[in-house]
Image (cartoon, rainbow, N blue to C red; front, side, top):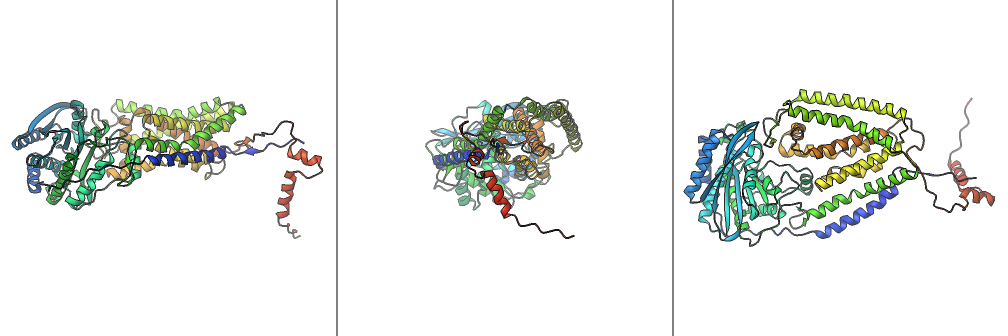
Length: 617
């Protein structure tokens, strides 16, 4: 009697569990690379920031130069006033004029910068933008307060000795994505910069702490020492806590890099940069007036920044550059390479399962071509919708901002075009429904082995992860839930098939919720990221990987939940590694006159069953 082939689950969870052992070993090894932030020590010299003078300058800016939209007459006149203030302080002053495109119009902008020379190598840069949001009436806190603090810091360091040269930079175009800061990085040599400190909204009434922004549009972040320097400086000089980011926030911002702050262009170039704000209740631009600012807060934040500059000035060598290094605690840092290794290690279970699936397909001679065609049909509607979005952008049917980044607080980001988005979604639903109908017709014409479809889904997920890693090693975080959960999906009800497939997409809503809270735009965060997509602020390569990820999740869920599959259709015959001449268990038992192991197990199960009650007549 020949042995009856056993069946093993698909995917093979033995391979999955073995790969997790290797993953844990790599994670443990990565933690041996922990370092220290080497945070500079605060200077013992007292600060000399004059908050009353800074408040007087703030009132002058708001009163004489209201509605300072970038490139307008008030903005240009304020630039000349800043030049006069720098010269009166006795600083070497320069004007850099440049052209920019804002809302489809060419405008002339100016960067004003003054230099206070020092004898030691290396330079410290302090920056503040003078333009206000387009809908602001006065822009008192955003960002007349930053310019006033910048001018007072320039005056303070003319009477305070310092070893390194200090540049005081006043830019324009920050409301459209740090245009002035970006232009400064292009026109000037910035490799010798020790640090960049940006001032933004530093006169908030009733502050809850010192807000920090050390991110960039690239996968880089300000070094831990610059983040951690803010905490003692704020505690000593302002009696406020620095709102340091958590570890998950640091990793998430590396995985989905975006920033419109003045520090962004510098951090993207590897220069340590951070923006200092007075965190507190958000005030609409229309209400950002002199009535809602605090001279006390302005004094505290200005003193904190001066203490940070003095601490950096006391160093004899530059600190760590901006990159992927994050801080786990105030005394331990994790290098960016180790973080990338940890994220990549979590892909090993998925990779092991995918290789095992491919081996089974080859051994069983499963035809993969029909499954590939089916996958292409599921992907086609997403590609068609993406082409429609880009075409609508070219034709001017969707908001666009050529030459400038769309900030989250702009008028465009705050007014979703619901009708046009509904039309796009309707087109996607129709196209997707048509693709599903064609796919089912294709399945009737050619045999599509569901096991091949499962392999294709896992293979596409590996492809998405690898390509994402090549563009941004931290972007793998977005597909990690799918890499962990998809091999555990089972055929059957929705809780075993559909739920695990779509649970792998959980990082998408997590990112949206995080940025909705961080940027203060609430439920309109979906529209903001849609604008970043259609304006190609998000690279087209990243968008293509995203739609492939979404399409693959649908394929996996549909295959696992397919009705009418034959028993064992999503399993593999177990491999019998015994010699062909060796008798099976049943043959061996029959030759000795014994019951086979299978029969013994069946009899044991029958003995355990309770006796059936006789039916009543």
